[in-house]
Image (cartoon, rainbow, N blue to C red):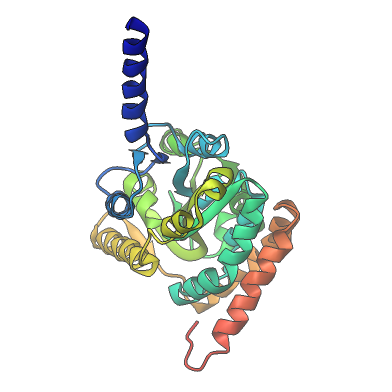
Length: 332
């Protein structure tokens, strides 16, 4: 009788555990009260409506992007969203998407990513044990500096900070600066101590961190920055086909999500322009031509360092750009 009671208790415990078992973990290092945080909340609602039961750690509870990406690869986290720069540390071919002056507009980027680039990147990512679900907008990178900058000659030998990513460092070298790779926590101390004289950042990062110390912001728009949503491939492949399809559809309208981020970026840029202590400058046609010419040498350097299928990524981008620009009424 005692044995039967123990077995019954064990059965009930296991049944309760099974009924509350999670589909896995979802992680990100998204700052709270940002548009990306709001989008994660919408994603969670969609996931729950689709019958997924995840645990959520989307505000950095499991560490930074590197830790999250490594956790996904080990299947300790099943779904994540991080910057493309973080993903490029595992999938070097992603660095090609940061080659300077690939895109001239959001419309170009949307067309190329959706129709040409994502299929190639998904295929490449599978070789690294990841399934790419979708992509999102981060924005254009520009140059910030402690002194006025107008043309590439103004940054020759100047200490400019960029992410450790291959493409960002190649760009900084190509324009003649003294390229310095630093992580995000080190930027402000480096500006304060004079270790760096400026760097590259999108308007969100600049507004939040560097604008207080580098009062000159030149809108070079040289790199279009993104993020990725992805899953552990082996976990994803074990899902039934209908569950895989449901997961891939959880971002119901990625275009709207990108437009929300762009609207936020436009608002922040307007705030910077309205401040009396910040100089926000748009290069004129001649200056922009100089920036483009200086940056052009970075592209072959990036491709050479960005993994065995880097050329496939560049070919997909160029094919997409050709297709977009051949459309009637398409504007670059």
